[in-house]
Length: 241
Ligand SMILES: NC(=O)c1ccc[n+]([C@@H]2O[C@H](COP(=O)([O-])OP(=O)(O)OC[C@H]3O[C@@H](n4cnc5c(N)ncnc54)[C@H](O)[C@@H]3O)[C@@H](O)[C@H]2O)c1
Image (cartoon, rainbow, N blue to C red; front, side, top):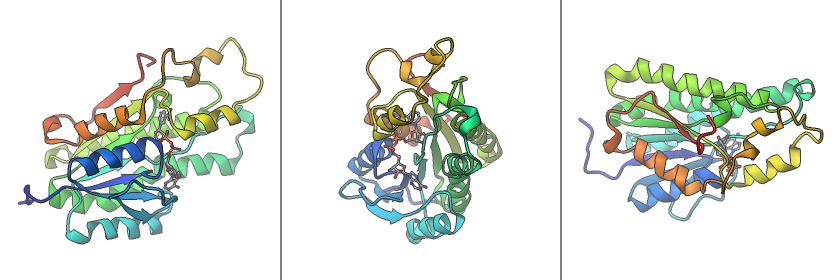
């Protein structure tokens, strides 16, 4: 039986920026032992940085083994991600592969590596997908395909692991105020077709979501209070999808 009195061991990918940074802070503040996996080292104070490229099996296996040094992982939060914007004809094969390596294969690799350790702890997984995986958005086809894949990967794995009570959930944010969004503005196609441009996520009405708001939802889904929630896809997008 897992020791429920020990601090939870939480692995957050993408913890060096934006939603992952805020999520790692929240788990830290509730007393968890938090590992932040990222290609950049700027994780919050009190979070242990583990260098990891989530698109590489070798890198992921080494990072997860380090996090599981104490014999358990209670929570895996897959937050690392990159965006892609541009006209479909202009997506190179390399860019398509890069987006899928980080946004889809990354969670596949981390979940596969962490599963034995989650099993030992009675743990659970929260994946950060996107509104772009739920509704069609023009000029983001590779990203949408990867995030749609991640949403279905979440649901399929949740079903497969439900007999073991290992929960797997996804959150699909709309526009969140992080560096990824300012980056998007710089890579937007210059000549958007006005007939479809308003379907882009940048057109979300109202103020952007704060990273910690998504972090709080991740913390909730990872908590015992959500013990009956698995296979859920939580749209966190102000009604966009
Ligand atoms: N910001 C939004 O509006 C928004 C909307 C929907 C979904 N999302 C999703 O939320 C997640 C977090 O995005 P964010 O807005 O916080 O972005 P961000 O750019 O602030 O943070 C992303 C983090 O992922 C890390 N990362 C990138 N490639 C990596 C790799 N190969 N291996 C390990 N780490 C890597 C980056 O270094 C960075 O720390 C992403 O999956 C993104 O697709 C964001």
